[in-house]
Figure 1 (cartoon, one colour):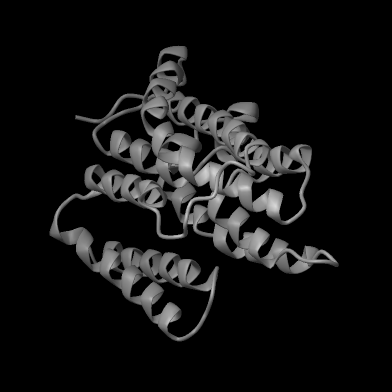
Figure 2 (cartoon, helix red, strand yellow):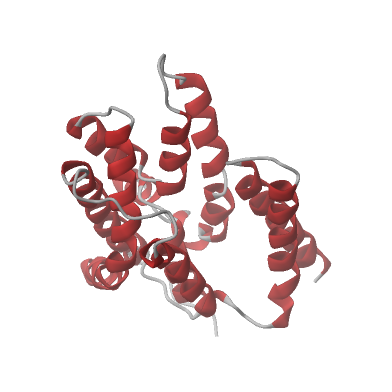
Length: 233
């Protein structure tokens, strides 16, 4: 039986918001760290909040902040953020059954708030026959609001937050991503591109390439392996 047409409803957006609320606690430590690092690099509260609101990509924000010095390396930081966020391109392609039906603010708002967590939940929903594209926007806007708020809190409370680098709270974000991978898994057929992505990222890391190259290598090699696999089917 063919799936029904893609829709965009208020019910779907509210469902996405509720799902995102459940993911926010795991995002909080990462957001606080971004705020603290931004403060240590000399960014003002307003600059930190604007960075989070406009970029909304934790990994690239951390990488850009690590590169930050005087004079500000605007080109280098921009290139690093671009490279790390290229992984979103194959995510958008995977969600094309929904995104291709959207126009205007619905499309651009969804793309602007697309992140790893929302992709993982929504691609699983799509594969299970879900057809309400508002789910993605509802999740994205909620995650964006929470992220922006908590990076601001991190900056404001920078003097009180001094956790050591290996503190267990920093594993929360990684644990969330690992948990989100479970509903995406469709069986042994998915193993090959996942393994290729992991090997490529590890190889780039052990070759001495710092951020963002391991992430980019894993994303591109994994996507290429998945495309090759699908082309043979």
